[in-house]
Structure formats: C-alpha cells, structure tokens
Length: 261
Image (cartoon, rainbow, N blue to C red; front, side, top):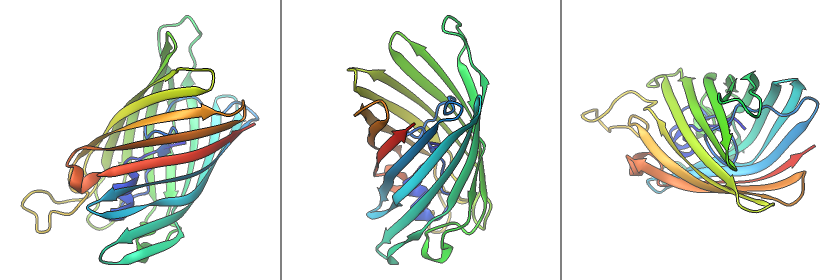
C-alpha cells in the first residue's frame, strides 16, 4: 500500500487536506518491493484517528495492487470515508480515490551491501464530497522514494517524499519515516515505525485560530502481521503522535485483511 501515507491519515482526514498515501500496510512507511509480475494483492481495511476528540478515516476501503511488469506495480485504492466532528456531526460516504505506480529502480542480490530502492508516485483524485469533509476537492500528488535492507532476520524500510497539496490555505509538505520488522514465528511478524510530517496548512503560532495542520507532526506505530496461510494475512497497527499530539494525532489505527495470489 502506498502507503500509504500517511502521511497522517487522521489529521489529514479531519482537517480536509490530501488523503495520504497509505504506505506499506500496516505502516505509513512503505517499501520499494512491487508485487511480483502477474500476481495480485487485495486488501480490505479500515484506518483512522482521533484529534481533539474528533475522528476521521476510511471504513471500509479496498486496495488492489497488480504486478503489471517485472519491477512494476499498478495501484488503486477506493475508500468509504467517515468524518465525526463535534461541530458538523457525523458524515459518511465515498472518499477520494488513489492511483499509483511503484517502480523498483535497484534490486540487489542477496550478498550485495546496497539497499533495494524504488519510487511510488501517487495521484489522489477528488472523488469525495469536500463539503462534508469526505474529500479535498483537489487533485494531490505524492512523490516518494523508498529503501529496504534485510539483515539477520530483520527487515528495515526507510524513505519519504513530497506532497503537492493545492487549495486555499494549503501548502506542499514532506513526509519521512522508518520501520523495523522481525518475523518471530513462522506465522507472526512484529514491528514498529517512527515518522515525521511537516505542516500542510499555512499559519502557525500567532495566527488567529492557529489551525490544526499548521504544525509539524512526529509519531509512531506498533504493528503485527499474522499469516493464516501463504495467501491470507491479518495486518494491524496502532500509534499516536509524539509532537504537537493534541493537534495532530492523539490515537490512530489500521486493521486490514490481505489476500495475495
């Protein structure tokens, strides 16, 4: 997933900025590895967060990835969005649709020291109802680079990218993240990540209202992947902010079911 991004889905959803790419489920940090040529990944999932007592996210959503060529993956994500705020009440409906192409630039051999490297440009189309805060009313683009290295049973991913974020009061912003995972049994993989996102709205201290989204955000997630079989997988994560918590991410979650074939 593009993540995936996320980056901070909850803050972005609540505040009406771009739907972030959802990265590498169940994390915001993605990886450079595309789906194998001729194979599919299908996810059904829910994700969201809480900011100052308000909540927003997508429930349910479907993500589909297809290995269209060697080292090339096509991606689409179709969401049902929700937005629950004390001022506007509860809103529920179709959200913004995400399209992307993941391309692996570097695929090292098992004994090579350099990392795997890939890019994952993504476009978020304004298909949701912006008046209900279920979409942004604008087209947004995300331009990330991702790296991965495995060592001694550990998998580490790192990278980030630049969001093009048009609209009144919006500004372009950066996301960076890093994750570490380890397979602890034949079926269970545990991991975690830390990430940072720059402000995506104009304004700041001293600005009237000091709007949410006008502050940088740092946070973390702890997650797990459980393999029922070679083709069916459960993915979960939960986390919160570490910087400007009340204005960015008091609690966030991801729960998904993956089918690979």
